[in-house]
Length: 142
Image (cartoon, rainbow, N blue to C red; front, side, top):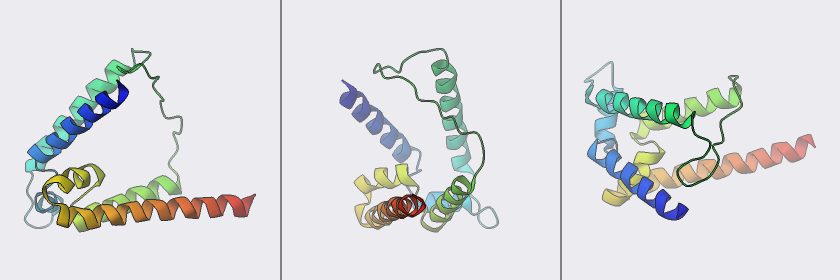
């Protein structure tokens, strides 16, 4: 049951990204170009996404388990640290340079694989590099 719910949720999310044009890097880059030819049309998409998420978080606060029966795992960290700030900066730089972030990158893989694949490959390489570097830091401090 869980894989079916995950697949359905992923397909719905990907379709939403495609329909809203969030998987179109030119549209996203035009939205991010606030000092130039700014296209504010994606602002409505983002406001709607935040509203839906806010409702989902509010409802989940009153539930013990998710729809699939698993327990919610709420974050416990509440402080800004260099890892969070650095990760947010890298995310923003990558989004601004390519017009893709992870979700739309995967959605674009279906409709524009030649352009989306290098982005996703670079993203995965960066994630693996960070993981290896983290292991080295852990073993060096032990």
